[in-house]
Image 1 (cartoon, rainbow, N blue to C red):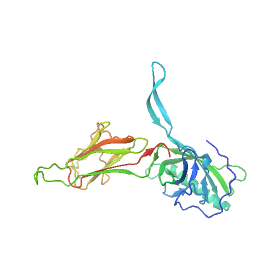
Image 2: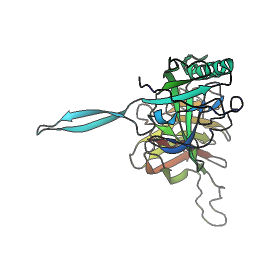
Image 3: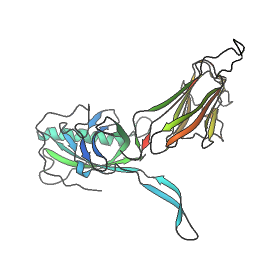
Length: 333
């Protein structure tokens, strides 16, 4: 584990812990430049990490692991030498984050140290569903933009163990483990398509309405890697088809499938399709995974850049709609 030598630091002569309202003044972080940082623990409390008035702050010189993800290659040897890259698998990310904690008195320091240790180690405690909820490390830029990543505490809250430390101040070098190595832009991107007002075919002259196809559209993914969107379908609709025109991948949702037995979606009824993890839920929470056209269904993702997609609703009417939502994913903070 990387180690950092605790520098001689004179803590600011100020009050108690921060209230979690912000990360403080931007500091220079290796690999990414000037930024502020916060940590949100599984309970929802926000901890500023770059505010030296909070009772702790980041030792920026030791921060690492914020840049591009690491990859493991699967290759095929070539008969004339060398190898061909067949697959690149992104690996879990490890972030090193040194924190300096201080107090005006020994007990004030101890209380802050304990509170921070609890906030990070909560990511190792299973919740009621047996899942260990992650914390969220968020990096914000001076222009107001930010990116975040889910983290689990792995180690480092042991202090320096040197003479003079642990009385009114100490430094911890945290190791944070990230299941998903990519950074997420917390601002969601959405696309909404809704059936227009239907017209009488014969009045005042032959007319074709948009009662079946909501249309082909271009969805822009501004991130660096593929994203896996969530779809929300609002009835009425009897059959819903989602197709990626570039890859030709598609999936069909049939509310009348025998495994569901619901019949066509009525006006205002909603079904949500998550592509990662794969999940289909009716508005009452019931499992509608059987409504998909398995085994040919492909819950496709959106590659970086432009994606040509088509939404089609058979049996649609006024109020029929499709909503697509995703968060852009990035290589770096």
